[in-house]
Amino acid sequence: MNNFDDLDFQNEAEENFGESTPNQNIEDEISRITKSFDELNTIVDSESLEEIINLYFEDNQFEKALEYIDILLKYYPYSTEAYYKKALILDNIGEYEEALFYFDKALLLDPNDSEIYLNQGIAFDNSGNYQQALNSYNKALELEPENIEALFNMGLTYERLEQFSDAIECFMRVVNFDPNFKDAYYELGYCNDFLDLLDDSLEAYNKHLELAPLNYNAWYNKGIVLNRKGKFLKAIESYEMSLAIREKFAPAWYNCGNAYASLGRVHRAIDCYKKSISLKPNDSYAYHNIANAYEELGEYENAIEYYSRSIDLDPHFCDSFCGRGNCFFNLDKFEDALSDYNSAVLLCKDYSDIWYSKADTEVALKKYHEAMNSYEMLLDLDGSNSDAWYDYGSVLLELKKYDEALTAFEKASIYNPNWAEPYYEMSKIHFVLSEFEEGLMMLEKGFDINPKDRFTYEFQKDWKKILDFLMGR
Image (cartoon, rainbow, N blue to C red; front, side, top):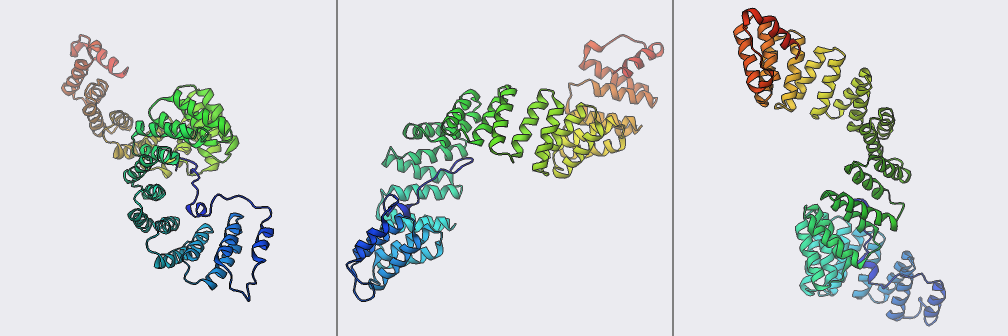
């Protein structure tokens, strides 16, 4: 398994018939075998039929193989091998339930064959019956404790169940029996990555790559792990190795772009994302990341173009609406920005940052009542955000809701006790309400936090000096 493309593991059913190689003269070969008997009148020997079955199977002519299996069963109805081979063929063509029926028949005749249990387990796994697959693998291992194929496939089943610690145990047993079993190292890399055991994951991928240096998926996954460790240059090297083996591998281009973006090499990141899009043109995330990069560069028009393409591909992509809204805001296109923020909050109503951006835009448009509602939604989600309480207080002050504004600024001072500005705002409100003593108290609290703001005054004759200071905040 890996983050984008699954590693292709050969099905055990195929391996039991030997390596699959096309036979150009298959019909001539079968004619040679069948020349010695007449199906209708002569009892045929099982070895000849098995040879025909193998030839058709190796040539992927599964229906023909099944036809001859049935002939074999007609003459040899108690043949364990015939039921077993029929089960293998059915498993190969996706007829899992029927395959399981014939595995059971084979096991009734020979309950001590570990290979039958192994392949029964694979059929259970293919049909999504993971617990039954584990039972079959356990029976195979009871009969043959060092059956590494059973251990390996058991590990894959544990992976599908997301029981990664159990999977790791299986794969470790595999490599203890066979230190050159490259696919087990690959799966160890994947499982350890999932459990955030990143050093163990890297070690496993490195061992796999010693044995299979041309596996582009392994180089790619190693890059993912290095990226997670913050080793972005090393991650880029791994992605580039993956791309050297398979240039047209969109996920590697995409994640290489992410690594370059993390290093601040924004133009190179854009190049990688665009290469990814050329291979996977419907990837809304790649368009979104290009837009992010252009936004970071301050190229807002370009960013808007790519955010729009991302939204066209995925109209439910909340972050793209938010990003495009930010660009419109920076271009002072506040109505367009508000439209995008409204779309974003419909998609992600529990995303506090969007409510904040929406509220700020409504303030810019002097839509104070709407801004007040947006700040309230934001504070329901993030009640300890001192900046949000301060901005909410400023809107309430604009609406002359003085008591509520005082409460908001007090909250801001509680959540950020080293911030003088909320005290200055509370002082201002108290003066507006002719509560001069309270106003001076708040002013002094602000001065205590920010001594550089302090100036000497006598309230009765310097009140204008005080108001000029407060109003200039």
